[in-house]
Image 1 (cartoon, rainbow, N blue to C red):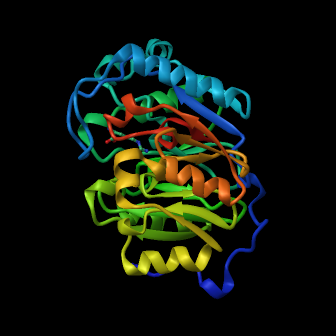
Image 2 (cartoon, helix red, strand yellow; image 1 turned 30 degrees about the horizontal axis):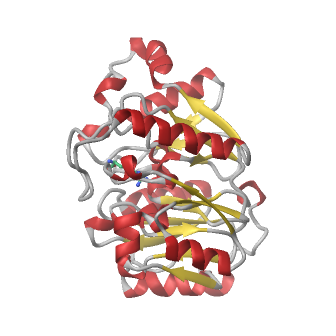
Length: 302
Ligand code: ARG
């Protein structure tokens, strides 16, 4: 495996080749009832979450989405009741479970999900909740055959409208996971190496806005990675390391290709998005930023 494009840049899957993922119209949220910062698995984590503010921020986020998308909510306590047969930690011991984008990736050609395999012991049991939620709804789930970490949409993002997966690897997801995904689902994967723990997930430094446009923090990528981004997107809206790290600018989420949901303190990125013609919707996520997450970590596109 090399750090090259798996897909020949001269023979890219065309735009409009992936109607299943042209827009994020269905979004899952997972309740933040037990959200707190109890350990440190990324450089942003600081204790001192105000639970009632966090709850309020999550509810506001969900209600903003309800106007624009088909929203589902996974109630972790209800799912826990169904899980009682299986040996899984209770939701009170999984303070990061509200970051549900990390639990799976939607399959390219049919309904269902490829489940995550978390890199850290602290979060190991979280995908079992998502799996149970799917089972309760007859939604199929699949497991990687390779026993390596893979943190779902935290690191793997479909290119809107193009049958292509962007795959961040290094701090969490292992590159081997993408070899399996490429072979097993016959999709092009563009691996992007993340060398700095400040960018522990791809969604901390990259957000595909639509077929042609992405918000990126160039600082996060190697020269090879930056070249791939330049080749495959017509427009890159670049953000500074400060914006990416202090305000989670790249953790914004474009849900329809027209409206971008973004943490409200990102004044420059909001301005840049609007001057490119996108509508922006501003939400407050600072309690969740204390755990290293913002919009895209909580809004799981499926
Ligand atoms: N504390 C969590 C972790 O380190 C935050 C996850 C945020 N999710 C994301 N997609 N970046 O895993």
